[in-house]
Length: 493
Image (cartoon, rainbow, N blue to C red):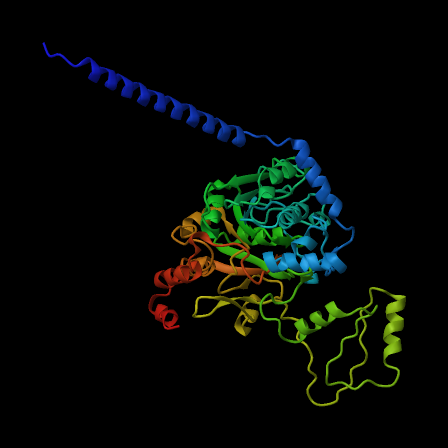
């Protein structure tokens, strides 16, 4: 029988005991550390804290500031803080926090839009808002504008066609199967897609605000576990939606009067039409709602608007720079405005030379175009399209769309193939979808009676996934797929 020395057994036993002791200590340490992590993760912030935070937010709001979409201004130290926030976030967040979340806007539509008779029964809409680290007050204001415009008690719902033009049956106001007692018309749901925001106020505080101050059954929040970028976030929202029409909006918009029905009516009449509203500008610095062109601030109308923003007089008097005023020309104009505040007056215009320089007021908006560098741009409505549409408020064909705001039939969205999942981050997805619509039997149309304001920022205040040139990569992919032999025109640039 093999004998093992007693001394050797003692050393082995001692070593084994030491190993067991180390393992036990490490296990206890790991258990303790894990318990601390769990405890930290399970810290529950009392709802009273969110309530107090929101009450403090609401106390910041200055009554009347920015109401009607007019430019809002602060002074002194508040002005400086606002300018600092804009430099950092591309939006004057300090000012936004002081403007009412549900401010009203002046109706900027063509007056003929108020005479249009829409069907009482229209498709249901799923409004999908994408956000990543958007300013809290801007997101809330976007939600409020969508909700307020869909309230059943809005005056524009008093006019509707209650007789089906095909069957002759009487229709009820709302989407098929909608509860007639619902306070909202046509709006089935608002889906907020959180593209993995890191700002704490966009987490539980936002959820609490929705639960306590907005109709919670109407609003759903889809929180993505990872940052996927705009295109894939929209795709996630589309998969989650239940409405007949998918309506994509950026989370820094404000919807105008009766903006929803014109889009839904057009899709009901033409299911393969992909429609966009007129996109107005909300100035990032002062939240002025401007109906001018969002990109090229040039030309007479836009120059006058800029002048009006700087003006401090009671009456704005616009003149061309090639005029000569006659004796006592001003007092009659001011007298009429003093007696009738809503009167807009003009003098008699005498001809100085053969050119009248008369402004053509019919061109009230532009449609989407593109450059061969792969960028979206605004272009005037071509003369042939003006003739085809027949009316200033008729659906107007648009070669491309800006991408952030559009409506599409949900079945047709999936029939088209939805967004290209291989496109990451931001950029190019709007042209890709535009080209696909036109080349796959659809139409892309601007609906003049639907207007939505959009905050155009001068830079991205946050990084994009993987910090790559996603616009360049996405547009190159778009060109290869959809531009055929014309793709080389882009690659040359």
